[in-house]
Image (tube, rainbow, N blue to C red; front, side, top):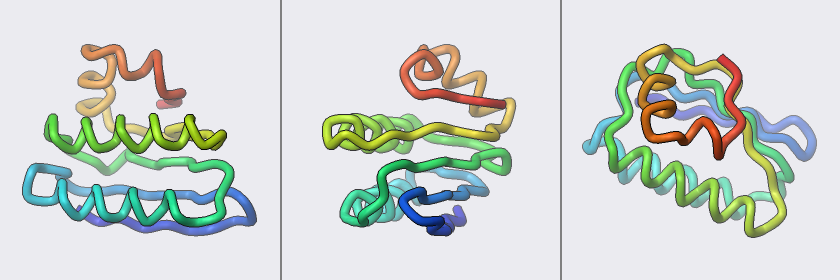
Length: 101
């Protein structure tokens, strides 16, 4: 997994790539928690190059989203691989988090 965050004023653009499996879930959780502590108002995720997300990684992503919303911040996904989008659709996560393919 590769995690990269590029700040642009109050917006953070976050790129994820590779397999986000259980071996990388702890790293993902740490990176997401670190983002919460930064002074961004909005987060835009690019996940076109994510080939796989484990259920643990998806759960951490959902917790991050919940924490963002409760603190008045926003998040969207712009660019998502077909494989991950299919999973998001099957668990209705695409109805909670704004997703643009």
